[in-house]
Length: 256
Image (cartoon, rainbow, N blue to C red; front, side):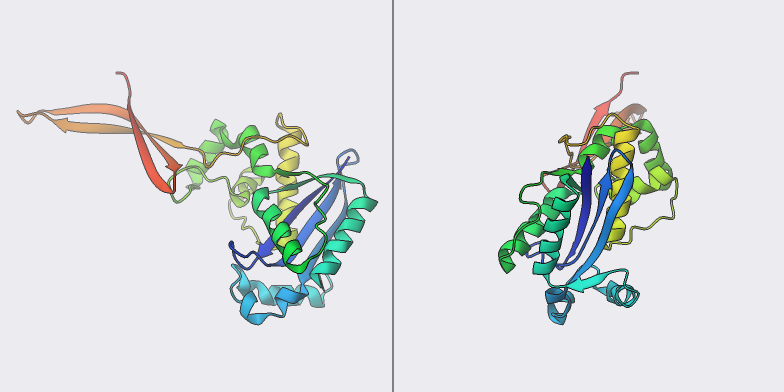
């Protein structure tokens, strides 16, 4: 079976014009990468004002270097989408994967509708690799201990499950930094997906539940003084979670 893992880099969340599209096509039987591509979208690249709003606009020099070295190529979005359609058909790609796939799916839908071009994923189901992470390792004690050891938490205090931190865990390389370019990110996300399938209990083509975050439970002690000034101590679990855009904390007293 052939699958594709893809990623996009965009100018914003609301109107996600994509300036960088990358993907790898992988054969699950031969366990080989059959194709890899790194595209720069000409229309967005040459719109300096629009490109300057991109999250990683400072990487422009990196893209220039790679285009000069011919490791990535600039094409119009229409050509990129047509190329992907042809190659997906050529390799008989059956399913697609991305980390936080709803966003990348939105990116393709938005850009194809805006520029009135064919979406290469129209007939290919897209699965979220995050669901595989949660199913395979996100809730394991070893992953939580890794996050505790290296302080890998979200802003709300939960365990982080970004592709960067999951890859750090899988490779035991705490110095790794995600490049945030489309092809490079696709390659590490393919490794994450393959780990979840080969080492975990996941199967290709399954929609596994995606959680907002993994709650962090820490042991605390509540100190209370009575009216006579005596101090009483009550151990409890503090569970931090994320709900409705606000940090909430639950406290559960432990039995002595």
